[in-house]
Image 1 (cartoon, rainbow, N blue to C red):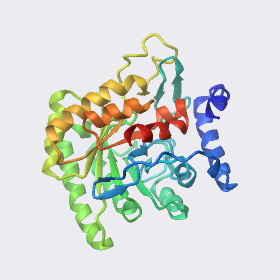
Image 2: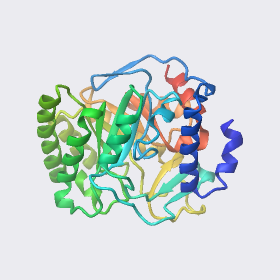
Image 3: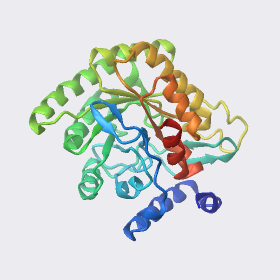
Image 4: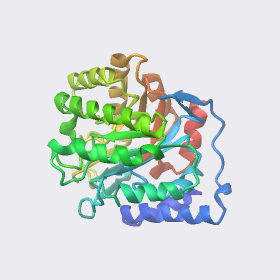
Length: 336
C-alpha cells in the first residue's frame, strides 16, 4: 500500500509530507484501524542495556520530535521507539525549507536544528500515550546555550525525562546546531559524561530505578577520535553508543538535485560510513558496551551488515521514508 501512496507524498514539500504522514498514522490509530498493518515477524528478544527488547528494530530519533505520535508509530511493529531530540526550552529550529529528498540516491538532507516544543511538552505527550514498550528519549541543548554551558541543558533534560524513559540518548552529533559536535572532543566529553553519570546516580536513588544512558555520535569522526570516545565510554561505563547520526559528507549524491543543500545527509549514502564506525567501536569496546547501529538501512541485508559489524540493535528512519512499514517487517525477518 505504501508503494501506492509514496508518489503522492513525494509530490508534497518534504516537511509537509512528514507531518501529513504522522497525522494520518494518528488518525488510523484513533479509528482502530492499526490492525490493518501487518505485524512484524516474530523475532528473538534481545537483552541490551539491561532491557528486554521484543525485537531488535527501533525507530531512530528525529521522526517524532515531541513524542506526539508514539502509539501510532508503535503499531508499525518496532521493538523500541526513540523520540526527540528535545531541548530544555521550545525552539523553532532553522528556517524552512530544511528537509530535502534525493530519491535518486534514496537519501535525505535535513537541517532542522532541533525544532521541538520543549522538554515539558514532550513529557506531557509521553504521559498521555498508552505505549508500554521501550521508549528512548533523545536530549540535546538549545541553540542559544553557549557550548561551554551545554552540560547544563543536558542535565535539565535528563532530570526531567528520567522517570519516563526506558533509556536516554545524549545527542552530541547533530550537524545542525552550531558547535554541537565540539562536545565529541575528549575534554568536553569527559566533563559531560562525568556530570551525567553523577546526576544519574542521584536520580536512580530518587526514583528507585536505573535508566540507561546512550551516546549518539557522528559518522564523520577520524579513527583517533573514535578511539578516544571509546576510551571515555569505557571509563564512565556508559550503557550504549548509537552509531551514527547524519553525515556532512556528500559521497553518493554528487551532482544530484539538492545535494549541495546544507545539513546532514542520511539514507543509503551514509550506510558504509556508519558501518565503518560500528566496526571500529566494536574493536575498541569489545563486548563491554553495546552498539546501536543506524544509518543507511533500507533493506534487511543492510541491518544484517550492521549486526555483523558489531551492533546489538538497529534503528531506521530515512529507510522508512523510502520503504514504509514493510521495512520494519523485512528487517525483523532478516535478523530473526
